[in-house]
Image 1 (cartoon, rainbow, N blue to C red):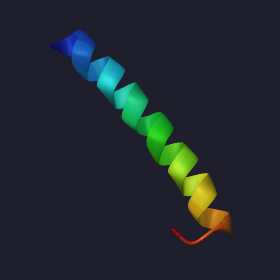
Image 2: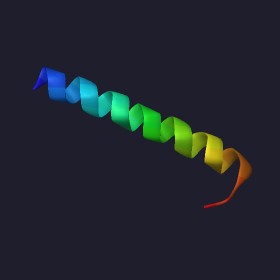
Image 3: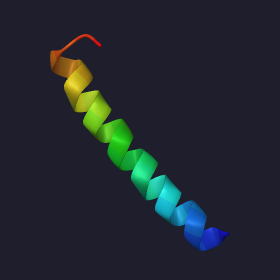
Length: 28
């Protein structure tokens, strides 16, 4: 489970970062 959680956390962090940069310029 730890491996899955680490991969999921990295994936969610990447999504949050990309969404954050997009939201900084555009309203979604």
